[in-house]
Amino acid sequence: MLAVERFLNSPGFKEAFPDTGQDVKVLGVRQDESLALTVAMPMLCLATPSERAYFQRKGEVHAALAECFRSSPFEIEWKLNSLDHPGRGTEGVYLTLTGTSAEDADSGQVGRGNRANGLIAFSRPTGGEAAPGKNPVAHAGKVYSVLSHRLARLIHARCPELLEVDVHLAARIGEPVDRPWTAVQVILPNGLGLTEVEGAIREVVERELHRLPEFRAELIRGEHPVC
Image (cartoon, rainbow, N blue to C red):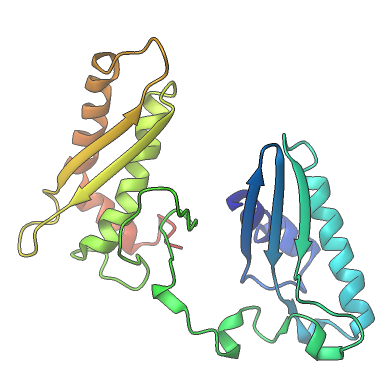
């Protein structure tokens, strides 16, 4: 799902489809080897001269998606702007002026499940904070939301044999943000013992916590995506 969103908002796609908006949402439901993907992406009204042009362009976007992900191991069923209804004019298409649904009473904003990894994954551990819009120096909800995902990625890169990595960070209000309670949970493959990876995991965590002031400066500069 994240790969689909990144493709639709990539520079190459936007160069080929400059009449598409950046407010892309993807819902994925998997059943065995079948994957149903529902994509919502507005078209820019000033670049869409007619209903016919809208549906023609929608077909071209659909074809681009199918081509990009044709090597996927799943059998993908695509739905793009599934509320569209030919014959209803502007009431039957997804058009915006700016490319985002925020202009038309979409009031979810920052509290609507926004996660630092770009996904709303109901079956995965997650924090209760929304990372956007928070102080990148002192707000644990922002700093830890982004840092926990970074730590998990770095740990998996260091120990790619791990099946899953979850990182939990917490701090008591009034205490330094750079000294969180830290826990790492991993799922090991058969034949691998925890003692074989524990040292590497600890090294990654200690290194990243030691450079936390630098990490917060990177947050300020926008070097880490906050969805």
